[in-house]
Image (cartoon, rainbow, N blue to C red):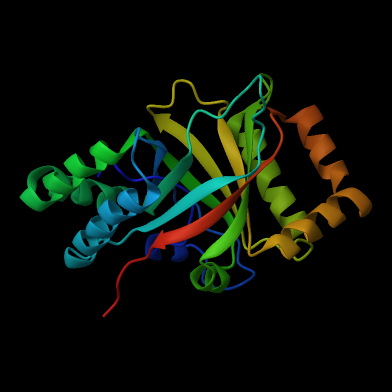
Length: 257
């Protein structure tokens, strides 16, 4: 469904990559559909949510195996000279197979078509199809936490660095910081379809259960020399824009019998 929006993230498919609290995720990528959305003139979030509720019922009815999250700004890279271009984003996480079957239903089922039409009446959204990879995930915490803090850092690998080089470095950092940070997930986000204007080759996405955990990471970064890891990464492996932070709300989980 075109109305789908953001990150992340704790779908059944994704959770299969991280079976316990300390396990680094496997090597299979998953689908992320992102929508960058703004309400249309005269429309309210209450009206938008009413349409979304119809979609949730449709997803329950057809047993969609997806997770949806909505992100709104907390600390961003936007400014008066670089204003935000949308009000919020939503991301929907699933397997590629699940995403395809869900779209088929939405495009061909009369009820799905009606929901999509009503969705475009209340909001203007720009859709992107991307993939994600979990370097680390605390599956239990991700399942239990519906309101969290997510940081994004868009990066482009340096020309002399191969993808194999940078992938090995990501695995090395994941091993080095294991148990030192209060994050419940570290994901890599790769823009693909509809992402010609993406601000980088990929993004690092860190998920924290609350502001206390987020600020504990800031303490580690600033006063326990965590910054040295970032400094080496920036100097050697990738050029990055710097972190931004978002509030994240889980807006849909698969309904289980």
